[in-house]
Length: 410
Ligand code: PLP
Image 1 (cartoon, rainbow, N blue to C red):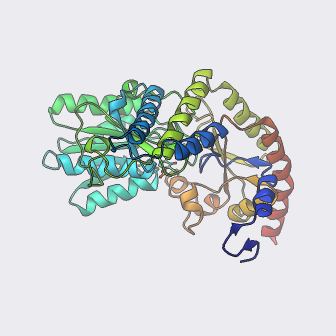
Image 2 (image 1 turned 90 degrees about the vertical axis):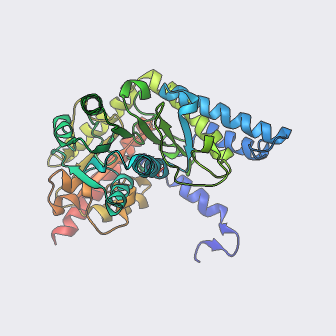
């Protein structure tokens, strides 16, 4: 209990110290700091719109109005209709709802699904669940840059393929997947067979960083998560195309048009709506500033560590906010802690895998040797990242990497 005051949680001083020690927050693919306007909107909703949106009285109606406004903001960000937006507890729930929900609703039409080896664990674990439930799942490989080949998707589709699920931006290396090509393959397959076949896109790492249009993507379902674009944690959405049925994951009072039961997380949803509005502004401004910051980071690392290897594409197929490197001989996990102690926050891979001893399945799927995987660091930015943070990270990285490499050689 060191540093904790009994019963009061972490002391204010501890929180302040932690805040002061954040010199460079470059772990935005794990989570982002909620924007001040989001925090204000959440607090306001907790104070003002605390009614149950299902209640017919004035307070209920006010909460319902707040949820409606947030739904419109999320829909506007994605070029979708508000009725297509189903609020969830985050990306993981949206993905599970899409995959398990489609499988349950259409299982008589086909029991084959296609995905890729570098998908997020939420997708891969939900797919394993489908396998246990009698589905056959084809897991396609990715190339050395973490990319899926649309021709391989096309070749994997069978008359009984019901579901395909691919991410738009990979969370560990930032590869932007050729989703348009994958969507075309699924659409043509559907036309050729005359049978249902659905495409789900995990857009969790893309929303708020790149323009994402649900209609233009050609996806049937799309998942997003608030905490990846300066919204609150524990809230996200599944966007569902017209006429796409799915069995809800949660049964109950029939909220969200019967598609996700449970009293709505009004403050979270309001915060997500505010984040969507902010994201619309960032996306409209274009990714050039973010790309320039990423470029500064990549150039700075290459200059200081000529043997460091950038993972994933380094052209327009690279997301503007993620840069992962292998630093040969560097114990990655130790480096993350040493950098954190100096106020520089990065990650070894996805947040979900960093606490596990297993090496990243994404980097292994890209063909890296386990030793290389353990020497990888991921730097991830957001529209709120400042140039100063990049320069601080580079300045701190240089001695830390040198020292840890020397120690590892002993
Ligand atoms: N999909 C991707 C690509 C992610 O990066 C994440 C989060 O790390 C998720 C899904 C899961 O989202 P959530 O944390 O909201 O459950």
